[in-house]
Length: 460
Image 1 (cartoon, one colour):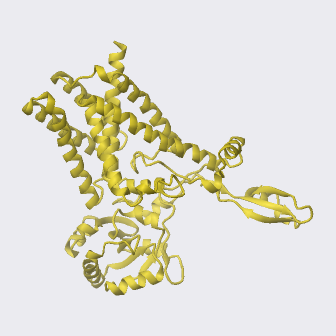
Image 2 (image 1 turned 120 degrees about the horizontal axis):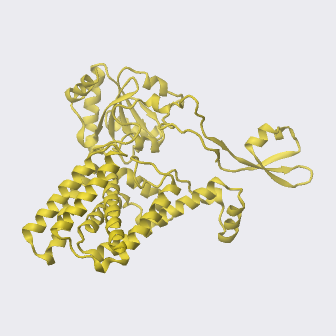
Image 3 (image 1 turned 60 degrees about the vertical axis):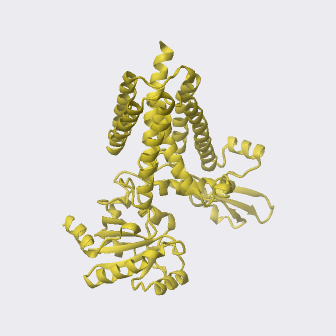
């Protein structure tokens, strides 16, 4: 009896969580691919075979997660599903474990445990480890620390092992079991997606998918075909959703630049909170004895080590976290003039209405829409809406781009990662009113001036 209920609970939890996790990633495939790019980069895992295909790879992972979640609930092709689940969770646990452990070494470079592992594996914690703020398991919808993500995967591994060990006892659901598993899963998905994420779409998506699977099973009624046809129907739904969000903006924006969010408010630190404290280590050498010592930048100032003229700084480490603190949702939105480097952030955020064309990478931006960009921008300027371009590109590249595509508006520079966060489109249009985001458009959905103005009217 215990085995029976442990299997039931495991199938419900794993199935529901994989569906929600896959949908969150599929809602923002481009954002998930950015995280994938970090992992496969030469200075991290160096999986060069995946470089250049991060977007399709991310889409496949999203679809696979949803498909496996559905399969484990339906009891169809269970041997294949349980093996796939086990391999996938081992892969995820490796990534989150690598990140969690690596981050700990990175944040504690002077710990004895760090020194021990550095000597065993011949690496430098500060120089060789890439720091990750999060692993991207739930995208921007629910940001977990790397250690929380790793522990989550360990718990999931336990549930999946229960499923794997008992795989031979599972047969395709009966009609009664369909009600139990689909109904239970929808309840769990509701509790998580609505209760935690305030997002109803996963509930609707799951209900439609389960209804379609039930219909396929009843209409075909051929056990040898049911599983494959249900999997095919689910794959079509998942792929359609994934391709839609890739060609447009996410249907739900969980980022701090979503419509309705005020950028300046997102930069503020609440009263009573303190920002994180960072430091660097100085390797200092005595000019008389030649001996070296490591001094933190905090001690360097507080203990006035700088007054000792015999000590000279010969090496400075990378910055590391000393004390946790409040990090505002927006902490790297800085707009600078491309020519003189002056800070234009406050000026842009204080404008009554400003349209921002975001091209995080001038060299890879989608050029087919530039005539539309140019035409709409001129019309906006004529109607009194200030237009600015934002890019991480260099001055010469930007000027060449502007003249090539007849773009009369000026460009400001901003960090590329920040611009990728602002909008999942290159180029993309963001409309601000006194620093508040009132409209966002993918380059496949560039509005007419009338549509843009209608969006403004909604905010008045």
